[in-house]
Length: 266
Image (cartoon, rainbow, N blue to C red):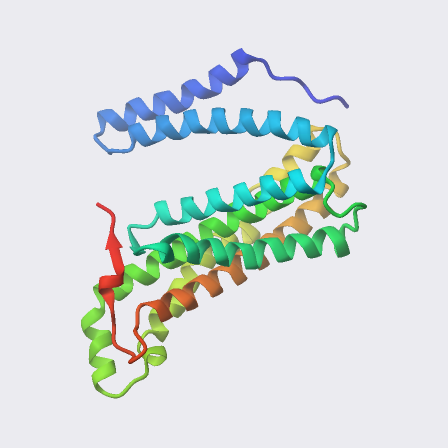
């Protein structure tokens, strides 16, 4: 089975649906019409650009080029984590904490998958490494962003409760433990829902793409199971790291709550 090629008209029809949604949201004064249109334009430009880049990288396999594009993907993901939070840490911490957490989780798990599970030779073969890392970063980014935003927002709203616990002799770790646990659960909820609904409510993107490209359904299923487990682990470890270090950042060395370290995006 050959993959059916899509033309500009096909993509234009799909794009018109997004434009229609933007017009409807503008009429309802939801305040998201501009964001929808900008996101749509970014989707087209960014995917076309990455398509051209991957075409070159697939032709000239070199660890240096793959490392460069991986670092760029990580930095852009770190920026998106910070940009999506209404309550975020000031200064370098706002960008650095999410980026560090994604690097620790996504890169390490991707490396394990390539060298141990898939066992591709060389391990940095771009056909496998770039798409896998992209899926890992994308999902981990969402979990970390949700977890950090919930942590900072809850700490801001419950600051009097936290300070009361500190006055009673609780440590910083005890005072913010409930908020931290809720924040981690918030970060993990999307990927848990995705796993629970996979194959029953939805057909995940990678599996659908492989089937459309003509792969055997069972082979596509096996790859999708692998990807779902890797993404879950990456999202979990990344969210745990970001929320724990983020909660510690809200207190100083004397275990006093320091909410002036947060900035609120209007």
